[in-house]
Image (cartoon, rainbow, N blue to C red):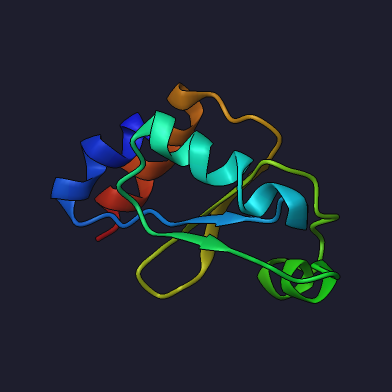
Length: 101
């Protein structure tokens, strides 16, 4: 969430999508977002089968979480990472995309 604060003034938008279990959507997810003081838009995917949504984001994605996707201004995926991403790695990918503006 800290990285969102850093790049928001540079016209880079972050969004978060939660694919958590339906039971967690009403309790654990909102609590986590409050604790993290998330300012980015957060979408809660409230479906019994998230597979179609997962495949629409990336056909190669098996749904492992967390997953990070970085899109350029053309809407093309220029970076993706499955699992926890290191902040330095994400910043490097962001800086590369920002230079291409």
